[in-house]
Length: 292
Length: 223
Ligand SMILES: NC(=O)c1ccc[n+]([C@@H]2O[C@H](COP(=O)([O-])OP(=O)(O)OC[C@H]3O[C@@H](n4cnc5c(N)ncnc54)[C@H](O)[C@@H]3O)[C@@H](O)[C@H]2O)c1
Image (cartoon, rainbow over all chains, first blue to last red; front, side, top):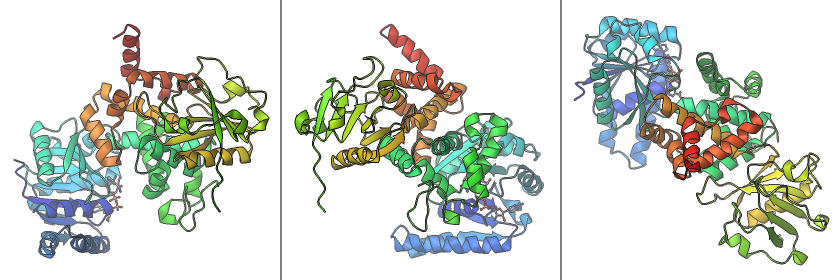
């Protein structure tokens, strides 16, 4: 038993936060969707409504079920509203100070039994936990994008996390229909620790003239059976995001594969950010290929 | 316009990693006298550099099968005649070959020969990726460091094998996790390929992970 009934998401106006809120509301939990930006929150709630309506259209949900899920999500812009939560998952900006001050604030509001979880991709759970007076009740819950569709969650105990907290968080993820995997509190956990250097290697292969981006992606897909090539994936995630991930990992790990390839820096500087800017390794306006 | 039928002949060693004996592609080969394309099977350092036939210029393309070596091992640094290309069908360990053919162009490769080779493989249902003559070509260059990392993470206790493989399948959409794949395909084969790339690149990424080294050493004693 997780002993978790009332839940909150901080940063629910963001991409990950609203997805996580949908997951919990879908599992039947009254979910407080907190964001300090009312505009972001309104936009995200609108996106959740569209997602639920599409699920009805596709026959994945009944209209009644979709309405009930939407009804369980309550938008709030005052952090104090989270005070009765048994679990708060934060998905605010990937910035240690932002997360620490939020954790300190929530720590002062919620009852001592409440669990505080972080969806951080690159920061240390132990460091974030140190900002609260309950590091034994802090755990990493790293969802994948898009959270409302991806079932995997990396569950990471910090150095001080109690076994009970870990077990409650794990059980709660299972109740939400997610598939938890346990990883240590290390940079990038499993997923990003494997993916970020792999994507960098693909960028370095372009840089080294091994092959054109399209050939690299084609080879990886046909040779390894991956659904997506590394360069189309970087275009999807955003080259700026890939650069930020490198900048978070490299200083901690000193793994040369995690350092930002010069080509990545140049492309970001040139505004070639991938899909979001219309061009990255591939051109989304036409079918032209970068370097082609 | 109907696609032109390209005739090809296959010579060289009978044991090919790209085309096992019963591979339908071998069945479509004809005599050298009628061939547009000559395919020389072999690959690897073991048998020494492939002798390029004197009549190579008669073919629209001559394709030399490669193992972990570069095309320049067979041609010398100048890359040989423009119609000479390298190729390897991607295959990990003893698992069935994939549909991918990596087509290697040396420094002086001519575009017509590349296009002809692409057309031939494409007509037989292969996916072709053209690359330059660098160690590991595309896929091994990218995937071997990932397998080494995954094996090292396992040694360091980041997560269990099941957790790592599941994460890759569910989170990244891989058909198989890195550790299950490297083990199923033969971890000592990973050692062999990784070491070959390490000899060229010398970076920690290609240093075979401990698990691979131990498996390879045990294999030397028949274990
Ligand atoms: N985007 C991804 O692919 C992905 C995947 C897994 C994990 N993550 C992690 O999830 C977190 C959020 O990422 P995102 O991409 O959804 O970010 P985002 O920029 O889309 O959203 C962040 C939201 O947090 C809000 N916010 C910022 N500071 C706040 C505060 N002090 N209090 C309340 N709200 C605040 C912002 O208004 C914004 O709506 C990060 O830690 C990121 O590393 C992201």
